[in-house]
Image (cartoon, rainbow, N blue to C red; front, side, top):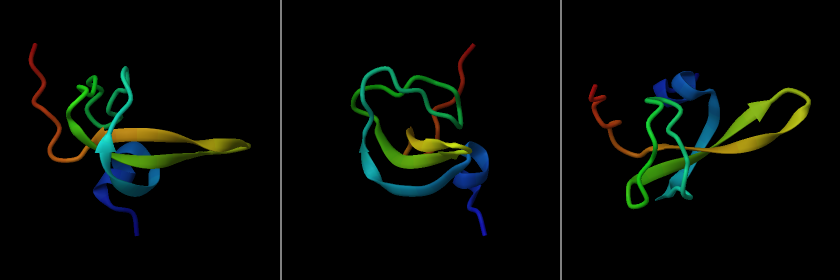
Length: 66
């Protein structure tokens, strides 16, 4: 059974909490992850290609400001 995080981003498994490399965007909220924001590392399975690493905010995604 998929978790909400898996359904939101398609990631098959969230491995651990870490810090994302510069320039990574959270697939759930589409916002840039700041350098010291804790985030979860996961793998996104792709058909006919190796999986890619994705990072998502570890806690709640920050509110969108417009």
